[in-house]
Image (cartoon, rainbow over the protein chains, first blue to last red):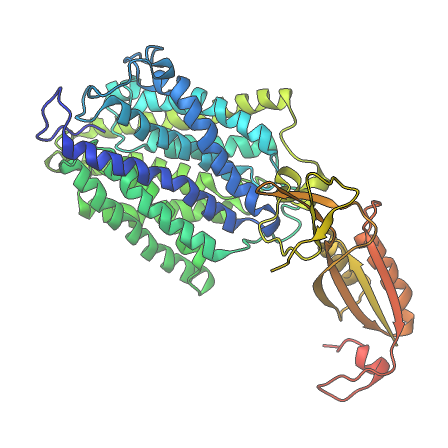
Length: 435
Length: 117
């Protein structure tokens, strides 16, 4: 999370700032990319709703972050939570963010994109049945009460960071934060009505692959930008973001071959995500060789979790826990073994003579899931008191696109009648051109 | 030999298949169709244009069966497809002049009797 390699404290560096501007845009792209990935995984009648949860995440999380979340995460070094000094972006300007060489305003925007994609990830647990409005309310509250708190612990000088836990790009707030929150959300909202009765299969595997590819592309900004510079740790993180998912893909192919005698496309897309997640916390801390080993090993627990989860009654629909929670957990712990001061300039892991690092990592691997799960469970129970969380069975059967948005992803236009606004319903209707 | 055509809601198509299976009806073709059966129009909005969707998505089942199967098939279709709301669909029963199984050349009742394994 901190690389000052060669940079002067107290001055904004043009090169670092240029890279961080691009990295911020790359990370923002991950949210619509996730929307595409998720949209392909659901049934066609829920395509738009699923995508819109990610678009909705941009809307509410960016606003909540600017108003309150950023301040709680990054103002001051309180042990559990930051301060209110930066509420509504007060005092966030062109002066460098302490500890970096980029303007605080840019730092805020970069961190905002993390908050956005994280709550978008959680939506994968509740697609195809959660009401859109209830999700937006949940997303706004979650980004302040869960994400900002975990980000403060890991990045903002909170107790995990000051304790020595290493988390380069968000194993704690983003990956374990989303994964274990997703499990809680799936339990509170409940399973889809057809879950376990009918085969609910992805409706467009091409979306899934394209979404995974765009996520990987954005992840270069996510990991490569988390050094806040163009220094060594950023280069290391960037390159590891190429190597780790490639190794996860190879191992996933083998696992698919063993289990089903075929290499699957949806499996490959999942493997890309798992690899990117696993390297996220470790990206700037472990050597490229260890990053490749991490990619290969991280495939195993996530693959196992997906296979096991689908046999349970828990409809954690798009396997956010397996892909993000479990892989993030694995990556956080892996730092404790394989961190190398010769590569990261910060700390060694167990294999290089510093067993204490593993203890610091294990602490984060216990605390983050516990907080994410518990806080999300309570928050959703509370939101459920205020408004219904899910659509009725009839609405679920009709599909969330028509019910929640009044649109279809694959409207043919046949039989569609244009209602002319001035003429009203009585006259002036004409048949739309199906072409 | 009769041809049963049923138009049902797409979200009930799986329930219909299950019910047909329980009624031991094995030969089924289905297709996605659009139609209108007196239900309320859906209103959708695309970039400010409000559109009334006059046609609803439906699934059409075509089932050729011997006469003794007609009643159980109709019951299975109703059981699987019914929600009680307008738009549940229709069942049409038509006489069939001739049925030929392409593989064997069997005709009529023998052609619509499932192959025993």
